[in-house]
Length: 295
Image 1 (cartoon, rainbow, N blue to C red):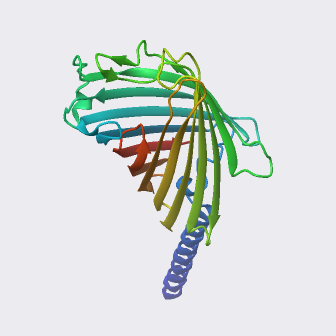
Image 2: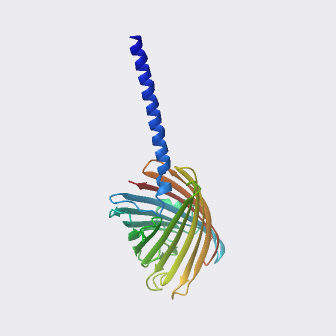
Image 3: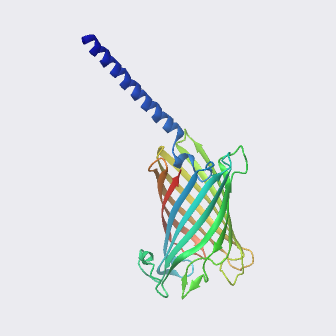
């Protein structure tokens, strides 16, 4: 009986050690595989049958612009929902739909008054403003960290400005975004670059930006203390080029943020930017919060 107990104890010890080794191996594999915030940057595409859904909220607030200097507070809130799914067997094409909702207040109202959605005449407007069918693809089979996203935004607003309150552009926008990322230092650092181009179509009478081209390059540098967490800094510049509408505009923004992988499928991000300079534009700040699910 004593020998049997000893054998059982030895067997239990061996099983427990094997279980610990298996857990360690699984942890090592997960660390090597990384997380979605490491592997599925905007440059990367998802596979056939997968879904990539991102809900991103941008709050821009300004009390200064380059036209008048100090001004009463204006708030422009934009909430976007991007839905993509993979098609084909080689992770080279994704199809999607982009939806945009806005809520704006002007004239010195409170910073969170956009949440009232009251439509007060002369100080507030809100509603769904555009939607866009989109395609995302990798043009080169051997470079899976370079991709292009092309979308055609279809406006849903009747008037850009009503009673002094701007809501959104009235005009079709053909948007093309070019993404590239590069990881280095044993995947502890990652450099992500983007060039966003927006061709504003339509008559000048319908929109301040129609018949123009906006180019917005950006550089994002991320550091990963762990595979599930990253901190980042960013620099963006936006230039509106005149193609016949007799209006130009530019601004430069600096900022930073964090991302965290909540579960295997879901991650959250928070970003802040400050418009440090510009011409014919507001000089405000943005506060951003986003959720992304990939499954």
